[in-house]
Each structure stands twice: as structure tokens, then as C-alpha cells.
Length: 235
Image (cartoon, rainbow, N blue to C red):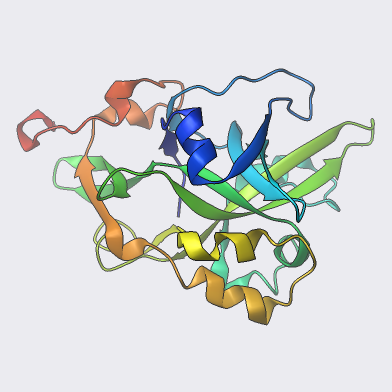
């Protein structure tokens, strides 16, 4: 699964790497949001995503936790932070966004927890060279009875690579750069064409290290969350 991640890569590097035309800094609520380093991103928060209109890629912020357009209760978002890649075409919450509303969710690392002798230990997982990457995502628009629009998203997960399967059996789909454009292609796509894109991921390039228990608290968002700790510091 993926329940926490971080994004500290500067905007100019993200813009170059992901070929971004603009940054839409308005949330659906109308609250202005600037791009800043995030060390401990949690469900329910706005996260940087990329969509395409077929001509250019645009970056903006969507709430993490999908609310399907047909849902009567927005609290369902807390159960929809992840979507299993194997069942996207069948699940009512995901099958329409899978065909029509795909996005990239930008990150440069994520966290996972593992039960060990001393207790539950957090690990930071990242690519070997610490570069930024795109997690495959889906988005949707929900309209409340009062007319409020909410734009939300979910991170697609797959079976963990052999590198990190010791920590957890699931991991986010980290797309190969060469398939990102096909994933974003806005016209409706058949699941049979999309599913192979999710299988071309960067899981074998991941590595990890233990981090402080600070990351356990979603209200703590500081560099210390992602810094390595030695085995002697783990209590």
C-alpha cells in the first residue's frame, strides 16, 4: 500500500522532468496553495498531481482519498487512498476513472512500516539516485448536495518488488517515464490497453532505510522524518 510519502524536489526540476506547462494553485475549495517541500504527506491532504488535456500537461493539487462521483458520503475518501491495480476495471469506484481520468502523482519517496522485535519500524523507500518519480493515480470530481465541488485522487498499488517485499506485500505503481504519456492520454481507453502500462514500473530500482518514529505522526512535517537512523537509535 502507500499511506505516506514525501516530495521535496524543487518546482523547476519537476517542471523540467515532467514537462509541465503550469501550476494550478487553487484547490477546489478556492484556497490558495503554494508548492513547498513536504516530508510527511498524509491522506486527506492536497497532493501534487499531473493531468493532460491532450495538448499540455498541467500540475495542480487534488485531495488524497478518492470520492467517487456517485458517492453520497464524502467520508468514503478515507477508504480510497489506494486502488489495487489488479481490480481497477471491475471495482465501481475505479472503473470509470480508470478509463477516463488518470493522473500522475508526484513524489520522491514513500514510507512503509514493518513489525520488528522492538516494535513497528518506519522505513523510507526511494529510488537509488533519489530522483523524483510518478505514481500512477486516478482522479474524480464529487459534487456535494450544497453544490461544493471536490477533486480527489487515489494512488494505484501493485505487488511489491522483491527489493521491498520484506517490508510489505504491496507498493505504489511507479511508472516508467516512457509510459507516462500513454497513461495520461485523456481520451477514454480500454482497460486491456492500460493494464500493461502499470506493469512497467520502477520497483526493482528501489532501496530503503529506517527512519525516526517522527513520521508516525501525520502532523509532523519536517526533514527529520526522512533522515536515516542507525540501529542503535531504534528503541
